[in-house]
Length: 272
Length: 272
Picture 1: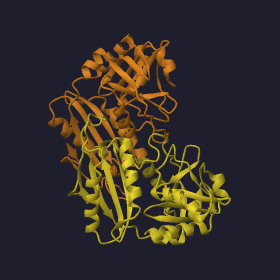
Picture 2 (picture 1 turned 180 degrees about the horizontal axis):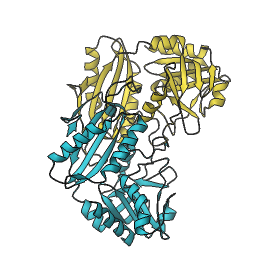
Picture 3 (picture 1 turned 90 degrees about the horizontal axis):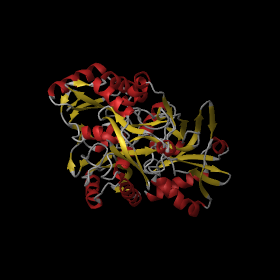
Picture 4 (picture 1 turned 180 degrees about the vertical axis):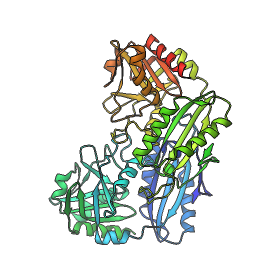
């Protein structure tokens, strides 16, 4: 692990990530020493830092990423955290922040290939997502919603489904959600909630051209899921997980693993 | 500063406060070695930890607070942070968390007595508060909203006013807000947003009995503020700051420092 280029695994308590969750992060799949979808992740990180007004030294970050990648032989997940650093007066940020850059490799969970191959069970969590158009889409460090939803997750579900206050689906705890409904691929609108995932972005950008089916960002609720031909969740580290069972309150819905999910998995595999 | 009873000012990067803002905090006024409104703060901390399912050792915390208080001669602000500690799988918390307790004294800002005596200028921030009934009221570590609002604050305003998406007033950046309107004390409803401050709680509990004026938790917008006889902001460290000017978009409202604000300041002073 590197913190501002130094080998260490400690941080000052005064760091604003500890005090306020004042920062952003990325989690990136590494295959054969190569960070997959690197440009997409870097673009999103730069955009998030700009929104939060955290100055980011991209050249230093890239050097640190190279160092960590060179030191790790195995595939894994690269986590980058950028915080606003220490200082300021209470919530007030310092006039010229010295951000903290953290770059670290994690092993990939062993069950991920099986989840992609055989599908997963999705559990509808009761904890609602926080609504805020000013922070929606950004992968920031204020992640209590995801932590609280994870606490609800039963052992027989691999992923949780998170909704807004009125039970519209927004995303998975660690993923974005898509459904195939009436020959269309649909996914929730994230203008007020959620994280705009890199894999979601690729599917939005490429699937109409590659799969030839229309794609729509829209409202997604149980009404749509009940008539879905396929459901899948995705993120750039886990790839695409077809959903075979959905536990929504007292209701259980079953789904087959369909051709759209498989073709998107192939598209993803070709990027690796 | 004590971290789990040890003198140190570093934390593992793996701590869930860094990764997710997974924790809660309290900021407590210390006068003559005594933490003011201690029982209220401890009650709120225990309740917050229970909501987030973070096990808290109250006896160890109290010992650490005593140690820090004994080592500090001057008045100040005691900050307590409780995090869920390290571990777990991604957002998923460990089955038996080992929380991190951080106890630290900070000096009091030098301008606070002047703000209480002469009043403050309040600036309406554009950054909206996040809406979430499941987290509302809790002083948790997901504080990006307050950080973003602070970035808007001009140098000629001592506090920022934070609203919901529809411009209803919720709270100050670091305080709660009250107004005297038509002989009534009113303060925003916090069931979907905001931090339920200890000083706010004391005012709600005591002011009707002590001041003899009715108090109402309700919707507060510019409509109410325009006709207010007094506005003040409060928290347990700064006490009660009368508002003399409110900057709301292009509009500036002026207020006198009124008798209700002064009587509540007296009530607070008698608790010190």
